[in-house]
Image (tube, rainbow, N blue to C red):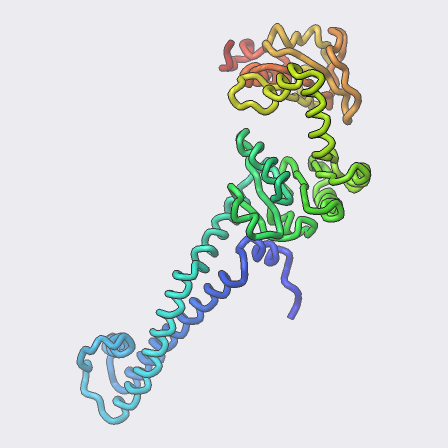
Length: 362
């Protein structure tokens, strides 16, 4: 026999363990056997001279052992056939009952149906974030994304970890192309890779970059030496949590108010203002105009902190008014969600929201 196709392997990853598929297979075999016994019994009684409906009725009452009398008197041949039908039918019915009870009590069928629903949920996702590795870093990243309304698909080889995931998940190796496809990498907006070792993270990063050259990939580096290697493997950015944590602690020690303000802006859900980014495209209406002409603060109400040059170029803090906006540039702004929304609309149309019939006020 040939190897299973990629689509069947991805389906197997989503549908779960062999126990669920085996339970469905046993149910199908049991129901097929019951149908076969019914057909054989009906045909046998037809051969014995019964009309079709009487033959079907006689077969069902015999197999079900309900104890009704025969539809017609039976001769020696009919009695022998009925004895064989009773033995086959009762055995088949008991087998069906056992299979159904096992599937329900052990939860195989329920788990299989749950994973089928998960498969359909993942297939409908667009612009979601894939989190590979559901350890401490992966859980923290997932919780942050979910709290901000983003959709997340978790990938991990540990089913115990996946049992605590708050949403769709795929059981498997994140370096496997079929696993990443099962998580919807073709439609994802970003991938966070936080596996148990730098080697696993590197392989998963390579696989993800090969499947999606344009995907934003954030990889966790356990050591400082592995950061550059992860970038070479295809990571958009490699992050070392220990390094970031140490720098953050030092910032609180030296500049407590600044660090606390940035912490609240980036992580406090109760605060109404955020530091956001707005990336310009070739089709945006503000491309080719200067910052003085656009007047971000006057037209949108948000503060422009910096402009980043296209293709991940350098940042220019507090850019001058004569700075020309280019396609691919990124605006770093500080403001409320409504103000940032007005800026996004302004970037697309090239006109203030009030001039184009927008509904955002303030």
